[in-house]
Length: 372
Image (cartoon, rainbow, N blue to C red; front, side, top):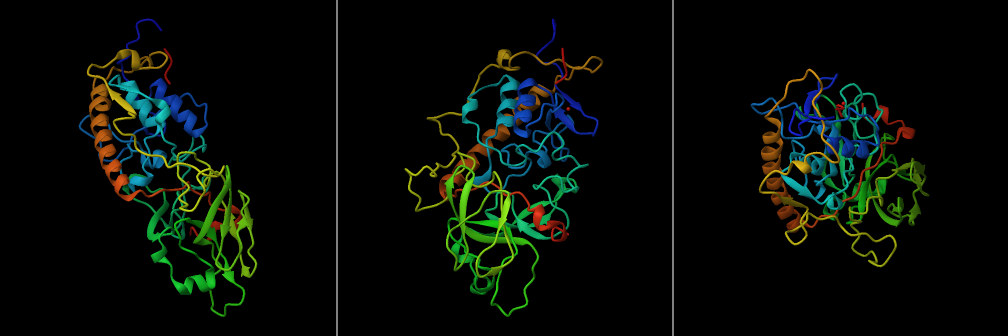
């Protein structure tokens, strides 16, 4: 409406107690990410280790795990310069943003407005969270994982990566290969499975856990897997398959492998001209900038396409712009430098994550835009 200041208060606390950023670009970006039309879906801020203003310069880890502005960064190769972060930087007025260079954020994609809430992370409504303390796969499924929590997760539990990278051949143990069919190769990824060889006399558990098998892409969201001693087998997404010579099943995750165009396939021998070939997403360099910092904040970039107003009766907060414009900017640029340097040195390519196989009964093994 008339007289609305683009620099008014844009943070508020929703009905669940979550502090959120309510600017139009951020709301749109999060709606797109979660596939929700909820008009109150503001960008959630971390509630741990907040600054003097009571506001954090990081996203809530339960909702935006893997973002470069999350409170804790993991493997640099899996940290993403995501659309929600770019939207927040644009809305500060300090940056002009090339949104076409945003990187895919796998965590929570398409999960809806209730994703990551304390009221839903324990109810098995999302495969990104787990319950109990069982073994499975990290959500990017490059590693096996253990169901754990940390202070930033507020009691919610996720599969934390173990030191058992599926793509490292040196992690392969002969005894495991003999009875479980696991293969550790550069193209191996973690799958939920309870496979065991039919002719093995060992007493082995039939619990569904994370297992490492080779995979190769045959199209968008289409792939095959290879178990020790087997042929390449089609793994139809969202289903389970059996493998000749083995008891048990392998779950085939949907929209996690061979799906995101900017997440590399990590297959050394893949034909680059093949329809299944894909390039690896990288952190942009100075020759191909993702962000251009403006010397003077440009209010015209604060809200796109129009300003967001503070809710009537809510006092104006003049500290938000510095919080976003300075704290977020400094943190983001510092993190970009670290991530880029590590990325250049490691060149590790990654894949997207699987959905937990409810069909395999994993429960037993995972024991708020205010209008003008």
